[in-house]
Image 1 (spheres, rainbow, N blue to C red):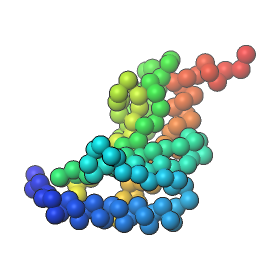
Image 2: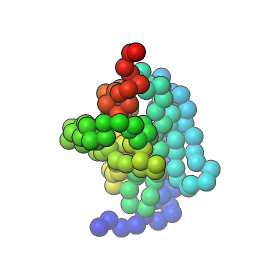
Image 3: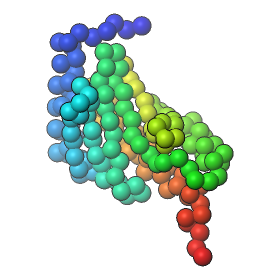
Image 4: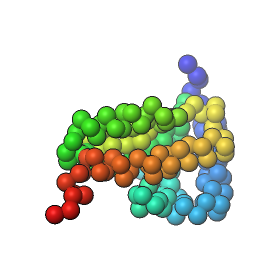
Length: 154
């Protein structure tokens, strides 16, 4: 097990994340907003404009051992529950560093974490890109399965 980071190490990593976000926002036109959580220490929100899903917001939360990241994908399915969850579980097999999970109100999230020892600009780029690309690839197919009757034409 890795050691817990002290305040000075956490402050240094906060600086790494803040600097990366400033640079990423300037370089990546998909990023439309970057915010810090006023109530949860060391949590950032990165809002991205998508094509399949209008917006995706990624939360980064820095802990003493890991950086957790997650994004809301879509609400619990209205129908075809077994097929819907099978679809997402099969997609989990091809993901690197993230996985689909069920969260509050049975909504679907994409989550992961990495040890703080791996935290650098390249890894942050990879994480954000993985979450964004995964949501863009899975959103519409999952929506069509879990909300099929909304897509049927009368």
